[in-house]
Amino acid sequence: MTDIAVRTLQILDRLGVGDPFEPGGELVSRSPIDGSELGRLRPHSPAEAAEVIGRAHAAFEQWRVVPAPVRGQFVRELGGLLREHKDDLGALVSIEAGKIVSEGLGEVQEMIDICDLALGLSRQLHGLTIATERPGHRMMEQWHPLGVVGVISAFNFPVAVWSWNAALAFVCGDAVVWKPSEKTVLTALACQALATEAARRAGVPEGLSAVLVGDRAVGEVLVDDPRVQLVSATGSTRMGKEVAPRVAARLGRSLLELGGNNAAIIAPSADLDLAVRGIVFSAVGTAGQRCTSLRRIIVHESIKDDLVARLTAAYETLSIGSPLEASTLVGPLIDQPAFEAFGAAVAQAEADGGKLVTGGEQVDVEGGGFYVRPAIVDMPAQTDVVKAETFAPVLYVLTYRDFTDALTLHNDVAQGLSSAIFTLDVREAELFMSVVGSDCGIANVNIGTSGAEIGGAFGGEKETGGGRESGSDAWRSYMRRSTNTINYSTELPLAQGVEFG
Ligand code: UN1
Image (tube, rainbow, N blue to C red; front, side, top):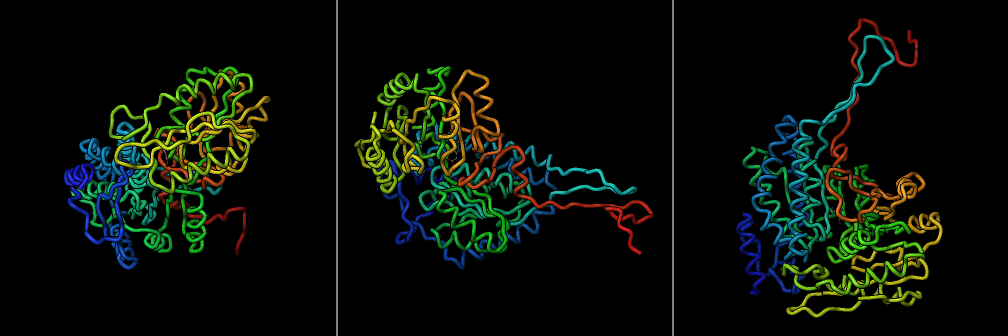
């Protein structure tokens, strides 16, 4: 057993998971830090998955009649347990997803934040009272619990994505069945152990929160089961294009958080010191494996050389290595296919006439794993490879002269998640956020594309899928609306002035 495997078992034990491994299990759990096997797990069969959904549905029927502020106590307990176990869960995220320590902890903090938000929300779920045209009548709306919410999540935010959905869903009166990425099952089991303990403390019906271990076959059960009212899926656009039509075929709802191809415009007036820091964090943080990672910069021709020189200098000082080392800024890619996609994207960009400015090569780190030096490629045009999302740290540089051309380049990709502009010109900033500016769900000024906080609605347009999670009014996706008209008069006036009899 490797040191990492031993440490993993100790963490799992402290988080209340125990030893989840079964020799001979079909699902292999690995750490990208050194590629080593942590253990094997037995996946759920499709029949078992259907039973889990059935139990969640039965739990929902009890949970929906619990008053929302009382439901809030469940997420209050969950938030407390996450605070208590933040270090262990953060370390497990580092071990299983390869995030540096600070980002592993940051991800758990994001879970704590959404629990706080959901707790407050449990006393604020509200509908409108709307003016009615009929005398002696009142019209209003109520928001009712929806049912079982199926959550499908990716490896790169192995715990936070579940919590954005689950914390809201629980206070909204729903049950949650979660199918995590098969690359990050251990962190999911850890969340489930904490949710189980929180549920015990808060007196929540058994089975309200459940995890399905397995690959696509198990995910398909969740997608196809009519008892799953909402499927919230985070992952690639390819996955979303498979999930959405299947859920739609049974007229279920889906909430999609798919690929991004996020860009930043760097205008001549930009504060370049600040821009460089914002760009580097967004482009190389999480080794470029966030859906919000910065993948394109569109820089004014007058400052391009200066900016690229500064970025190159910053890239060349990046410490790349084990994410468990305190000094590391760039950890490993998740696996070999991710590494191959990185190499292929850089090679294709060069074949398209791009000039590799820095990085692009593999970095040997003792013990193994797929580590790379983040790449910057200066592109003559926005070619197909630039328009595709490569889930790795490749940053393409594009140049503009007129601001309108920058906006056109910016929006000329299929994805629409996050975006940024670095400028001190208020007209450019406002234009960028206006209807004719960025077509993304997130448009930032003088900060990078990644690292959104949970108070805002999170999600994007076009091939990003249109869903919104986390803050603002995203909770509405997890409830159903009932419009009620009440007549407290002795007459029966009909709407639209209709006379009948
Ligand atoms: C993702 O990569 O799936 O804004 C989500 C951010 C994080 C969420 C990323 N709060 O970068």
